[in-house]
Image 1: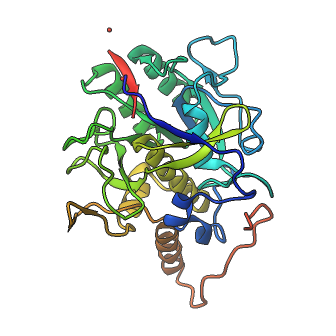
Image 2 (image 1 turned 60 degrees about the vertical axis):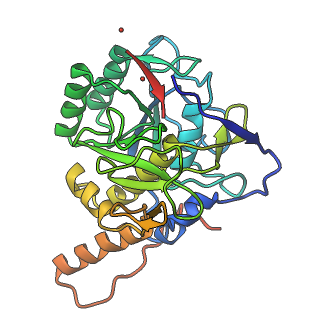
Length: 321
């Protein structure tokens, strides 16, 4: 298992606040039109801190694969961190995530040490299919392929679920599994300087990049934590997918992926611009709105929607990516 470095805990962050990555992908501009309302996002991870003030609005029952008779509480922190990047909403205090009105369904398949078996991950995916999730966030990876995992991902994709996965933190030229499956949106990480983060896997199997350097997000016990890696980056992409689906629930996983990949901003590596770009949530939302406007044949300009809840201001082991 690859451990993520926990850089710092900061409980004195001004409240409310919007993390730098949220601003980088221009999510606040998109909130005028979409906030992810009623979009169900399963986070297959270590669970969720149900008591965190910034996640109370988004937290749903979810599923504890390890102990089905217990709620999927987070005893590690990783799952809570990812959930915050996706859908935190401080409602005047605390942080705001990418899709602040989305619903988070924690699927606890990873233990306190951040490890999971393939069978537990597959069981988690099956739960997501059965409970009709719209999006699955999988911020973990494996170096070896698994037929069982591959088939589970295919079933989820056929069920119409958008699947997002972190590419991995080994700095190699291909994504881990399951990120490299064609049904998945594979996410690499970028730095504050619009460059591929040194630890991030890269190459042609990466579909899109998103902020992954020193990402502040929610942490158990009402805290906040700064972490780096492709796990963090995947959360932004899941949130952006929720924004799109809250505008048009009929979008297929392929369509969501296409819109996101067509709406990126340039990224560089080793001083050169690369083909794969960085997530731009606002550009993706704008592209979808324009496409809908053109299909409608309307002559009038697109109007802003007024939303009551608009935000104002790796037997193989899995490892976290």
